[in-house]
Image 1 (cartoon, helix red, strand yellow):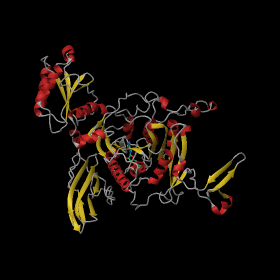
Image 2: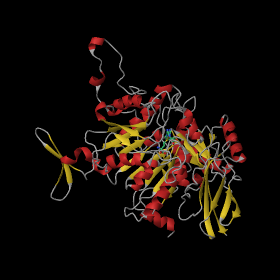
Image 3: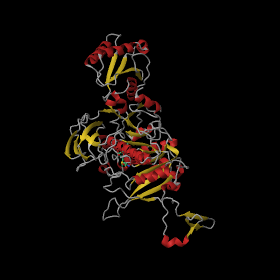
Image 4: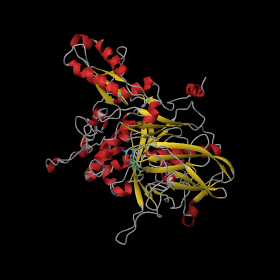
Length: 633
Ligand SMILES: C[S@@+](CC[C@H](N)C(=O)[O-])C[C@H]1O[C@@H](n2cnc3c(N)ncnc32)[C@H](O)[C@@H]1O
């Protein structure tokens, strides 16, 4: 039995190469009853007459909810990778590349314990552009971007996502939204409308004294805000797990301390009715001000090298407080993967998502390295594998490796057709029109014989025989000239001869193929890149020995195959083993003008034969991997 098959038998969850079809959910309107019933709270006193007060979140349509502005697009997840850590029977964690609104709409309700998000702040475009790939830049564009429409535009964009997050949270779940002064107060009002004023738990202030802006015109800005809401009245909260030590002013209060028979020190506080005993070695309830320093500029333990990265300690506190061990933590704006890294380290399951391909590559890398570290430390909790899943932008090459039936199902789904084989030679139906799908291999063009066969199949349909409906659609990567001619002939003859039919030939990578998605684009939502196909770059690596055990590597000869694309990031693994995990300091290297470094210099710890891997991402979302061996001397 091939190893792959053996593995897939014991594996829980999807395997590499698989397509996960979207759930069978109707494209229904948003559920208004998911919003809190708090009319009283928002009703202005009658003595003021009719003062308009908006009790619904910005962007909410009374009939369709957020789906009016952001219509639903259901597309499959393409599982491009399953990074394995030796426990295939465990359900894998999930890392998504795609727009989080649409990814979330395809995830099951009430499945997550804790959501921590750190969305782009409402603080100016430049600051928020981190990785620089096209998918990220598009979300900051003047036309559809987050800032088009100022604060209301930002809130509408965020609200649609917060609404979805509430659906995903378990009844006992919580959400922390990380913001700063630019928008936190506005977002608080919106969250009150979505989660309920009574569901607000804390406004946590993350205070850092070693970073942040200073100006002689105001007090130094040294804090961020985390808005913490619980979904229900009974929510998970384990303050002891935060292990905040009880710090006592021993000078002032030592005379109040007592010691119990076990030798533990405590302090007693008496009220009229009760006496409270506080043991000094018990953790205290954390304050809502978290004094945690920002990572140093030259921190090599966790800093990746972009300005909005958050320290693990901040996220860690939210995780231990609000997610039970073994529970599920999600971050739908994952950036460099801080939340997922923390969750994995603390034995929680995780879901992460980002629209930037570079962010996903960095996150994957960080998680693989984190797991390797845990295995070195011989942590006993088994680490689940994780999958990397693409939504909306697909890699042609990986599609071409699919079994034909799976490929057909994928193409039909994307085209808005049903993959019901009603009869031989017809693969599906788009409404009442028969559809045929070509081969997964892009090099295998459709031939005249394929056209004839499909035409014959269409002739046998009831609709052809009874209703004289004579059209059909062929979907494929490419049509050979003889196929185009054959279809043309049919089309022309159809006017004069009843026996002929009309065939439409649609290329899978054409705008016509994605018409149903393009039709959903509203002024508010840019679906321009959904359902597009990308090619991986062909990575070429040159190397040169420059000193003993020291080599310079160069990827500048790499061929980027997506039109107009350029290399946006390079990652190196100088000790490539079972899985790619970049050598620390070689994942997100930027030059003086923030451009990606195409050269890397590395001093190997010893001599001998070495396996090396290099991953390159282009700014359209293509990613290529190169592996090779060199003799280090
Ligand atoms: C401030 S960063 C997050 C940084 C992260 N907390 C960390 O520590 O690395 C915000 C991230 O949100 C991502 N993002 C913005 N809009 C998105 C969307 N619609 N869907 C998914 N990710 C999005 C950006 O690409 C960016 O990586």
